[in-house]
Image (cartoon, rainbow over all chains, first blue to last red; front, side, top):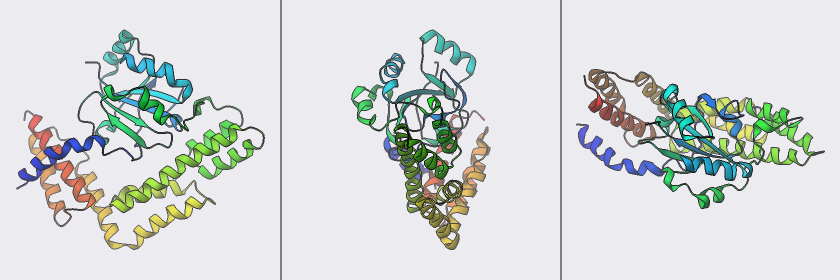
Length: 57
Length: 258
């Protein structure tokens, strides 16, 4: 019963690419902040922050 | 990744902070960071931030404005000088962690969510140092952004975010005009049976999906519970959240071996 719904949602998912624009960036604790004088991500408030999700592979 | 080093160097003093996030292990990440000569800040996402943002593939980038709102998202290849300079206006050239002397009191209050106190300290500093005005401007900007975001949340049906966010924010708004706006949100929810029911449903979604399934039958169990919860909520915000979670579980189930 759910399959048509799931297929429709999956097909619609490319729209998710821009759906967060205009929303507040979530406040989630991050671990091991390195190479930064900041103690926590909250200390970047007021700055333009470029965040890139990456992996070593 | 070299582009991040370049952007960091070129725009750091103009208000840009570069932050790379990974959910991979520290050992291999640290080795990679060193091998690539990365100089920018990085951290580990162990709290599901990427998932919360709907990140479906790596690499993925987000540009967050000085008021805390996302102004752009996409593939890193889309980040260029034009995009960065477009959004630099109003960004602090002196980051919070460099605030010293009297500005430290503003920073401390601000990070504690004590916006009233932060603005009072900023006004005091502004009497002898123009930096107080800039500090006050940023505090106001972030506050307005948070309040507007909570008002938008309740309008689109995200009652739980509106309620919890308002309760947390209200604590530091004593005497500010924003206090009334935020308290109006919690009052409205407390008095509205339908809004409270939606919030309860959102809490139930979180409870059902608290543990990430490791087996197909665990995915099935969560999907069944969500399917029951969805009845009568189609087309609502929480209904959309349930449908998105079901899709996530369906995709996860297809990747699990057992």
